[in-house]
Image 1 (tube, rainbow, N blue to C red):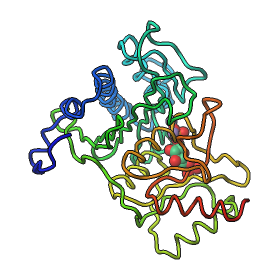
Image 2: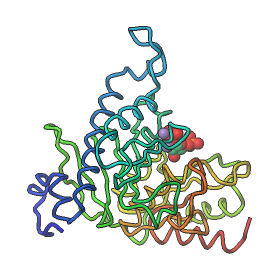
Image 3: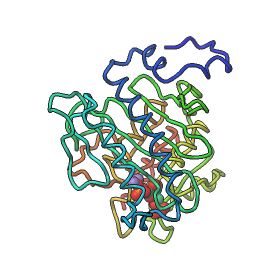
Image 4: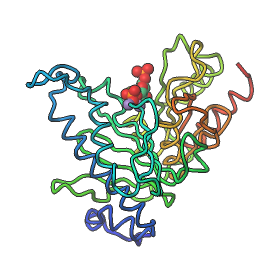
Length: 316
Ligand code: AHG
Ligand code: MN
Ligand code: MN
């Protein structure tokens, strides 16, 4: 790993390729992560190019303008097809997994090409979530996931990745290079922000009691409705908890295990945090279907273990 006495000024010149090489990440995986990070630039251009108010309407050729999440999926797929590293591509935007390699490639990709697409017209930050597996999906995250990353399209474009050797943030600079901004992100044992999804009136008894506990402890509410920036805030502020819980009328919550929860759980665990559905680790859950949803409590150990306690104590 890079020596720790990198001065702030110097560390900004450590680009993504060098960082992965120093970390000893396998060549094809380095190239794949790099390829996806670069694709983030094209997706960002798409977001900024198509006037956000037009997304989903007709373009100047009177063609149906693809919604941004579908066009982001197309950009990602085109970049990964014949890349030589990807055997299969599973996307939140596609009904089934597609084979995009010759059949002998090492990796299987899961993609939420554009997370938070409902926020595009509000100009709030949105993101891309990627899981990289060395076995076919759907799967058990702990067994097959070898890397994960998310890209945040905000005032800056940042990319947070892990290949099992810590979690690190890179920022896209003016020259279009990803340079190191936060290395070995490590969450505190306990944070001070909570990010709570779902309608309050739909919360279960256990969840409401858990939130009440955090309220009494004086946690600050930070929730944008975008999973990527909401998780990224906990990552960069080094702690706290995000939850999208089981709800009275949807016991599995809203977020998708394969496309959203497994990659974020991998990144947060690599940053010393935890992720549970209330009883099991997210990465220990075997996804039976691609669109399986699970409740999630993710972030610092204290808050996540506390959630497990509330759910162990009084089963709903
Ligand atoms: P997507 O845009 O990929 O469908 O994901 C949206 C998700 C996630 O970004 C966020 O955490 C959640 O929707 C917010 O749901 P609510 O609008 O119910 O808060
Ligand atoms: Mn999503
Ligand atoms: Mn999406």
